[in-house]
Length: 186
Image (cartoon, rainbow, N blue to C red; front, side, top):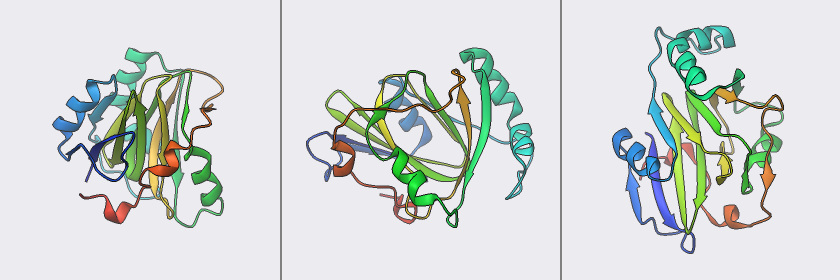
């Protein structure tokens, strides 16, 4: 189940608000400039499907978003719990950083947790199958795929370099909850 929890940056133990419906999550995130949508596949996508098959299933939404935002590349990333580099991949995204382009991800399967640090609030977004999240450029955040990561995501880029993180040096990400997929409910 998708979830949004909002915390004071000073209190990682007590959420100020929590939402579980897509409409409520989208409304809360829109207030800080974050896009949150639900997409449906045009046809079923089998586990292990080739990236081309995944993109074909979501072609109408992909094309709409590319036309609206001017993305120059789109790809599919897949991480499984048995991935030999899962720990290093997870660690790469766990510290607070920002990008000089929007970070846009659509979750085809599995889950991941984006945590945004905006002003004096922390927004923890658990994204699952069917969720699209678009984090605006220069928004400080971190991402956790969990200790046993499982997700398939479509990624959108405007810059040819792809994912480039600019790290803040803050330790805030270490103070907030990590992604525990089996504990994604309240």
